Each structure stands twice: as C-alpha cells, then as structure tokens.
Amino acid sequence: MPAADHAPARLDPYALDLELSLLLSSTAPSGWRRAVEEAAHLLSERYSGDWAELHTLALLLFARTYSGDRTPRDVPVDELVQALDDPTAGENRVTEEIRQALDATGQGYDPRMPREEPPLGLILGPVSDRYGGPVAWSDEFDPVPPGPSPLDHAAKRLLGYLSTYQPGRRDSPSTVPDVGDGPLHIEAELLFLASRDSLVPPRCVGGCPDHPRRLTVDGPEVTFLCEGCHTRRRPRQLAPAQVRLALARALGVAPSAHGSYSVSELHIPLAEMGRGADPYQFNWLLCGRER
Image 1 (cartoon, rainbow, N blue to C red):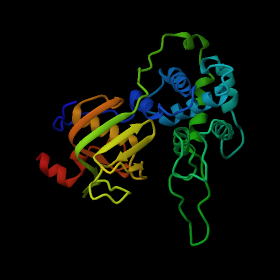
Image 2 (cartoon, rainbow, N blue to C red):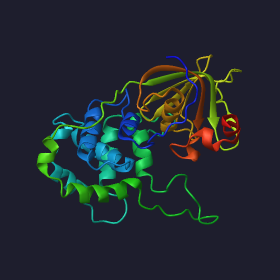
Image 3 (cartoon, rainbow, N blue to C red):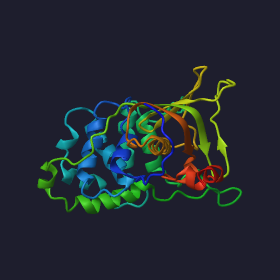
C-alpha cells in the first residue's frame, strides 16, 4: 500500500478490535480463536478496555475446551462462575488450570528455550504477573513479596458480572468485531523506536551494518527482519500494540489490520511510554518537526 504522511488521529488504545488482534495468533493451537471470540461475546456489553478480563476469560475457556470434546460456547456460565469463585487468598486457582492446559498443548514456558515462548505463553505472562513487572527488591537481601496479579483482580470482577448473567443473552447475535488472525507485515523506509528524547533505529542481532526495516506482528509477537535475514523477536521495550497503533497513525488503517503495508517513515513508541502514546506529541524531535 502507498505510504502516507503522519496525520494526528484519536485512536482508542484499548478498543476491542485491537485487543482481539493482539490475542489472535496464526500459530496458536486449534480452538484458541473460538475461545477468544466467545470471551469477547460474553463481555461485549461490558467491555470498555479491560484487557485483563478478556484475556482471563479467553484463557479459561481454552483451558476447559482444548481437548476438543466441546466448544467454548458449550461451557455453561455457571461453570465459569464456579471456576472463578476462589475464596482462598493469593493466586486464583484458575491460573494453575490455565498453566496446565498450556503445558498440555505445547504453549507453556519451556526453560530450555526461554526466548522461544509460544503465543499463549506470551499472553498468560503479563496477566498472571504478581510482581507488576520486573521483580523489585525491598532491601539488599529480601525480594518484595508477590501481590495479586491482573488475573486475580479480573477473576473477581468476572465473578460478579457472570453471576448475574442472563442465559438468554448468550444466544443473542454477536457484536464482536470480525478480526483476521493473519500476521501484519510492515516495511518502512525509515524505522525508529521513540522515547521522549531519542529516535533510535532497531539493531540487528546478527551484526549487519544495516538496520532492520521490516517487521511482523502476529498476535502478541513482534519480529524484526533485516536485509541479512536475521530475525529478532520482540525486545522487552517494545509492545505489539504500539506497532499497530503507530501504523494506524501513519496510514490511517485500522489498528487491527493484517496483511502487508509499506510506509515511508514509522515511529514506534517504546512500551514505557504507555499504550496509545503518540511520538509526535511526546518526542521533542518530532514535536519540533510538527511545529
């Protein structure tokens, strides 16, 4: 597609179609898409950007149906309520159920290949994180104890919502956006990672003199490809949502788009800037250019 100049746009960084595109990976196991779509259907009347609720419910539905003996739509709401209702303190019990399902389908964390985490493992990681990011230390010796994860909080909210869910509503026509699960391929003549005071091109881990200009977003994964065909999976400071939103600002396409696009110049905010941050508003180099 032809490149376009940057045009400031008001984009919802937690819109349902964008969130679905971050969950739907082309390499996810069979049944995952149905679990995501059913979770979105159950939450469609309520969804207002709560990614943790959507991720938690999709993972739970997958854990209950990955064997293929029933579909996510066959799982009764009462069964979901019973699963989420955990009176014990600490990590909600559905987290372990989800981990076991991911291990059974080859989607769990494998310490032998720490850099090759599969898509569902990448999705479970942030929502089950009980440390709020990198582990902090309270003093020289003792780590800060774990607190409730986003999943733990989401389970309580889902429990309250699904406990009053009317069965007939589940049979109503779906209003869930139709999102493709194919990868998003981007080629940029100039590609930069943006912080407040810098614009830095990504580096090739293979030592090539040229910087990568091509990248692929596939569900929760981002992969750079340089001219020497070295690949680099998503660095910690880069989030797939930021890539999608950057392309949407540059070309005016939907953040949930898939397929192949080309752009003359692409500035992707680092994850630390917060989802939805527009580098043309926070980066002093780009702000000066706009003025």
